[in-house]
Image (cartoon, rainbow, N blue to C red):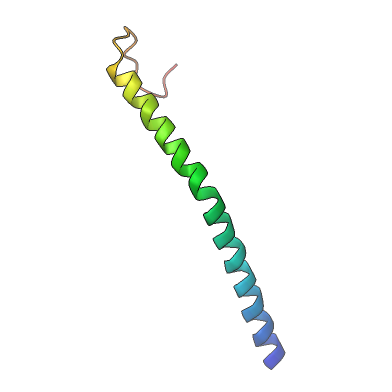
Length: 58
């Protein structure tokens, strides 16, 4: 019984380590893409183009 509990604790610990590593490594990519998307939306709002279609419509 002790080894089963220890095995579950170790597996949960490894899962949290992997999840933390993924979040830590993907967070900068998420921030850069959010800034680029914000700049794109700002450009679309400021530009005086005739196309006033909402986002998502082609």
